[in-house]
Amino acid sequence: MQEPHPTPAPHATPAPATPTTGPAASDLLDLLATTRAIRRLRPDPVTDDELATVLFAATRAPSGSNRQPGRFLVLRDGPRARRAKQLIGEGAQAGWAQKRTTDRYDEGSGTLADSPKARMARTMERFVDTFDQTPVVVLACLARYREPRPTDGASIYPACQNLLLAARAIGLGGVMSMWHVPVEAQLRALLDIPDEVAISATITLGRPEGRHGPVRRRPLHEVVHEEGWGLPAAWAVDPPGTAYTAAGPPTGHTSHPTGQNNPPAGQSDSPKGQVGAPAG
Image (cartoon, rainbow, N blue to C red):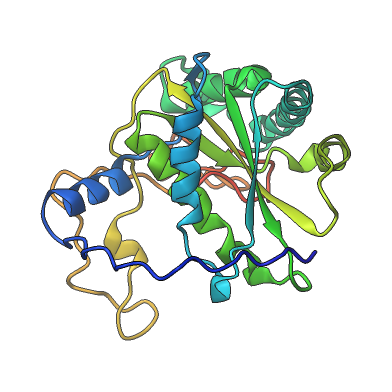
């Protein structure tokens, strides 16, 4: 699909360089470390100005050769938007039911009402059951200019992360998933999405019921190598007070290192095998 190239804007005087240290840089680092996956949202509407702010941030993300193939289809409260959210919710309910069984959410510590595993299951159940009430759903799309390649996501997923970080900065929250996949054909027909446009992610947005806060990930030394694969990097040390979690839900009959089979923060919201939410 070819789109007309906009007329180049006149050259403007370059803006002053942004300091790389100080409060602004510190705020950015804090955003990166505290943007959680927010699945519990209040029903309050998201304003036009707020949407413009987060989508402007999304479009500042890099893309291959600066081709800027990212496109964002916003679903709020119009008739087609309501139907689209209902469709995605139906796909999410089916996918979550399968994931709940496959990842054994109702076994082990999942039988304890106060365990992280059980709390996550309740959150997910509510999330998919009320998906059609989500204030804003953004379909992050990729306008293809060549045959699909494994690296195409590099030109849209950075924009998705920018969007979620900007949402965090202005008091919103959300999560990225692939819950559109089970109903993609119906969505394309309903929303007139061309075949040459890939639907790359579903992002929910709204005002959090809870709050953002420090996310938990693997220790730095487990994921950073220097000079060769598996060789330690002595400088790869987490900041003091960092909390950790294992990676992903259990597979097969492998137990979580704590023996609880807890699905940690940062797991996918999506059907097994799909790309999911890079948050927690």
